[in-house]
Length: 149
Length: 411
Image 1 (cartoon, one colour):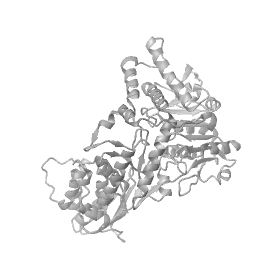
Image 2 (cartoon, one colour):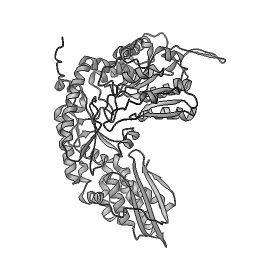
Image 3 (cartoon, rainbow over the protein chains, first blue to last red):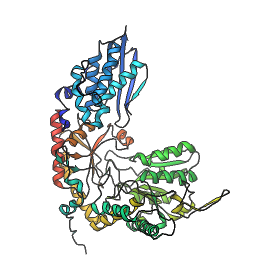
Image 4 (tube, rainbow over the protein chains, first blue to last red):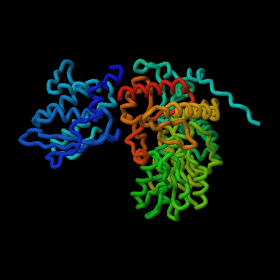
């Protein structure tokens, strides 16, 4: 990708304008805060997990379009999924945006999240896309904080 | 009698910067990031390369011709710095790795000596982290208090309250000459005079000032004045601490090691006089010589002509950017250097930075190592364009249309 504009597709811009699942779940079963110290991005993630399923998930915070759209699309993608599936998605997503997947690797779990694959060509923005997933990973492991540094 | 300044021949001097022949992401490079780091012109790069190729050795060591030659060039660079900032003696010029190291040196020697429990350190509201954190660390160590000179929404320091802010407990004042975020040129001469009236010494962070305006230590009367080589068209890894000789002589050494000693025995070490006692270990020799060459280059262009050119760019860019709907410029000081920080409704500065990058435009997007300023203006970050003597109005136009294109995309 030679032009970062290719990353800023309508779906990402639209989720940035109107993020889904925005807010805070009270009460919740899982909670973590994500920080991107170099950018100042902050994310507060709350989940309700019952019987091994992500019943509900919400986020709030401030960040760039990549960060906000990634959080918005992530919450939509993991809602209703099992914890194991959500963790596997987080793994695939991280591998994809870091450019660590073997060429030709299928990412069936990710669906339209593959929109973010272009981030791997903008190394300075990888942490923006990853922050929500790192925060999810921390929340599911019972850790209070996640940082992309 | 005053004569009109001959304007800079920007077309000619741009040939000194090979970067401008480069194509980034399909576009010619538009470098609007000199507040992050200035570009080095060829004479600087070539002077350093010449040292490394034909003159490289260590300084202040041994009797070889080569070592003497290197020492002469290295000390000649110190003398160039002295002349450039109007210091009284080359002994008042201490080489450091940069502005940050210079401030840490002062905080950990002069600061430790002066500041006791319950004392106060006074800083301005528009400091870079480099002029906050070293003082905060000292305050924690000593049980001292940090106080802040506030600023207006325009980004000007509120000096009405300065005389009340300076108390009997104030032991040092730290202030930026030019804000790296807002571009404000602070009235440091007035601040220093008012501090001295109460017997308080002042450290001035001149990192963003020396590339734009002539400074004169005799006129300013600063106790300490610090800056970096790489913002002054020189290399990274070299910086300057100017300190009044009486202070430098009274201060204890900082890092211990070779070069800073007079004699060492198992029982006792005696130290060099200033500046030697602050310069332990092998210094950044090529970088110091390179900074000397950068000062020659800047001096030959003329800081008055540089200032006039940059002011023209600042006024032109401010006028064009301010007309863009939804764009807000942070920092509208009456006296301002060629730095423009801005935010745009609905577009995070990091997205703006990436989109401008896609058009070959290099700007800084972020908190600019000045988070308290971001908090003061209630923004997470800004996009900052900074202009140097090699920039042109055409490059401002490229910036403006790229910003407009980004806004269109985010609509």
